[in-house]
Every structure is written in C-alpha cells, then in structure tokens.
Length: 289
Ligand SMILES: Nc1ncnc2c1ncn2[C@@H]1O[C@H](COP(=O)(O)OP(=O)(O)OP(=O)(O)O)[C@@H](O)[C@H]1O
Ligand SMILES: [Mg+2]
Image (cartoon, rainbow, N blue to C red; front, side):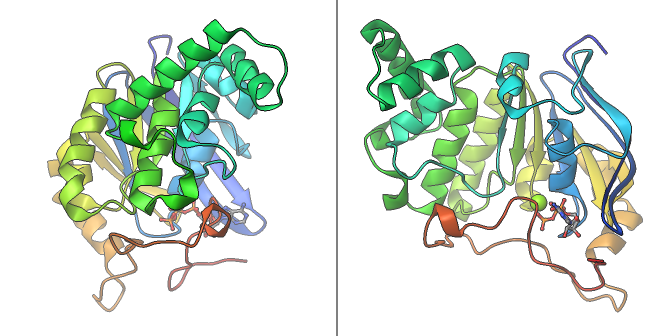
C-alpha cells in the first residue's frame, strides 16, 4: 500500500526449532495507533523487529508506504521515515541527554553529531539547529530540563522519555514503540497516553505494551499474539470481549500467566544491564528449543 501504511503479510520467523511468528499479518494505518499485545514470549518484539527489517523472516513480506522493508539496514530506516524505541532504553552512556537525542536526527544531521563528538570541523549553525530540534523533542516529552544530564543519573522512566524524544526528533512517518510505559509510574501513564496520541497526529504509531489501561485507551486497533500466532484483531472493546484473548492471559489451570509487567519504578543498574532486546523472561510452557 502506497499510502503510508505498514503492511506485514504472512510473516513466519523461526529461531532454530522455535517458531517465534507463525504466518502473522498486520496492517498499521497512518495517523492511527496500532497496538500489539500478548503474554511474555508471544512474539511481539520479534514482530516489531521484523517490521523494521532487523529480523529477516523465513517467509512473508513487509512493506512501508509501498517500499519493501525486508532486510533493510538500520541506518536506512530514518531515511524511510521510520523510528523505533527499544524494549530497554538503549541510550549512549557517554553522551548527555541532548546529545543522545541529536543522534536520532536525520542521517545527514547525524554526521554532524559524530563529527562534533570526534572534534572534526563542522558548521556551528547546523549544530545549533540540531540542538534546537533536540530541545524541542525533549520539551514534547516533558524532559527539557534534563538536556545536560547524563542518562545513567536518571530514573528509568525518565530515560524512557529521552528515548522517546530521540525517536521523535527525526519527525518520523512511522513510530515503532516497544513497551514505552515500562518504568513509568502509574500516575504518569495518562500523560504518556496523551503524548502517544499527539505522535499519531503526524505518524503511524505501532505500540507494544503490557499496561492494559494505556493500550485500551490509546489504540485504534489491537493485534493479539500468543505463542507466535495472531489470535485476535479488533478495537479495544472487541479484543477485551474476545474469550481467546482472556484464555491467552490465563494458564491452563485458570491462574494468571506472567504479564511481563515490571514494577512501576524498577531501577536497573545501568544501560548495559538492561534486558536484552528480544529477551524477556521465559514463561511456563514456552518452548525455547
Ligand atoms: N534472537 C533470538 N534467538 C532465539 N530466540 C529468540 C530470539 N528472539 C526472540 N526469541 C524467542 O522468540 C520468542 C518470542 O520472543 P519475543 O521477544 O518476540 O517475545 P515478546 O512477545 O516480545 O515477549 P516480552 O513480552 O517478554 O517482551 C520467545 O520464545 C523468545 O525466547
Ligand atoms: Mg518484547
């Protein structure tokens, strides 16, 4: 589709003997918020990694605005108007918050940041413009006052805001967010919801989230994965009323399965110690062969 949609068609991804995605299709429309939910290990992050070309599927296709994305290198994503945040935080330790956000700007501007970092000649005016854009993005996520801080001095939820600003600074047409609310205190979730809605005024947003209140209040359409299979698609109300979805969140004995919900203000020791991308705790019955 040449209309700014993300179209994932019949994608299957295997890691050794494990089928992480089994014939999954998903369409994310421009200026809409598309949710991906499901228990731990369901394949949500793998789907997002496939959507941006990080993971090459065994079969199926991914297109954005009519461009095939399968096998796209990370550095081309910005050029295509795609930005993503990681399930962890993924900020550079040695850079200030503002510098981290500047790294997220366009590929050409990024050369400016690198030359700035390594002391190479550059235009002061470009540098200033870049910094202004970074400051604007930080203001949008409510983190303007953090510009000169180092990331590892910040609480986890604040680092998540900075990571959001870094995704926003390039003014993407498609934003892929992997658990943006993890580490956010409960009382800040409504504000995050408003922010995600604001992002969707300019871009298609695909969001993985375990915080159900947030998902149900912001998403236009929700895709539900379980053990790599798409088990439901619909509006928040439709998905909530679907018995297959309830069953997916309950174990065979009716007890609740792991939700993947971290405690609200969990403080990992530092960026290096974050959960690995695509990792996450295994859940009962998950086949890791
Ligand atoms: N690179 C990899 N190599 C091997 N197995 C992987 C890899 N990435 C993911 N997996 C496995 O694929 C399955 C899906 O993982 P994925 O990270 O996509 O789940 P998820 O839905 O994002 O889970 P969570 O809610 O815990 O983040 C899991 O069983 C996981 O262990
Ligand atoms: Mg995940």
